[in-house]
Length: 131
Image (cartoon, rainbow, N blue to C red; front, side):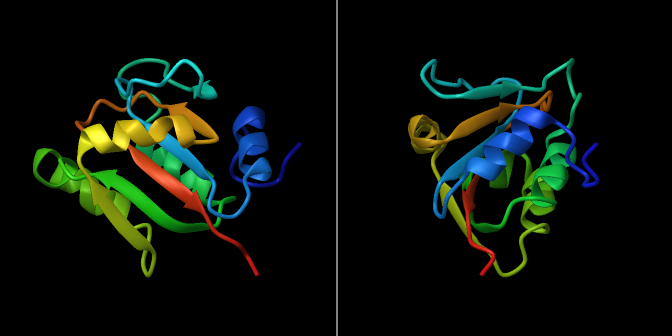
């Protein structure tokens, strides 16, 4: 059995496959995932699992050099915006309009759907390097 925090085998596998600058997306329950994009669906019910819980588990294994958020999160869900940003001190943070955010999804290695229901609670994680 894995010793680390992240136990979900498919998610752990996707992280292990990421190369420098490739992206992994964590999305809320309503994020429209393109059919051609790899999807890991963790959503069980509204709020389960919460995006921040999944983010914390992912960050236990993934080196992140940049994150991208929808511009709209700043006004629609400022507490979620602060909570996400607080996990990335010294990391580049980029904001784009939500439509531009959705246009980036086909380029992602994988999109992880959570049960999160907070508006615009989606984050693109760009893989960094550990050396």
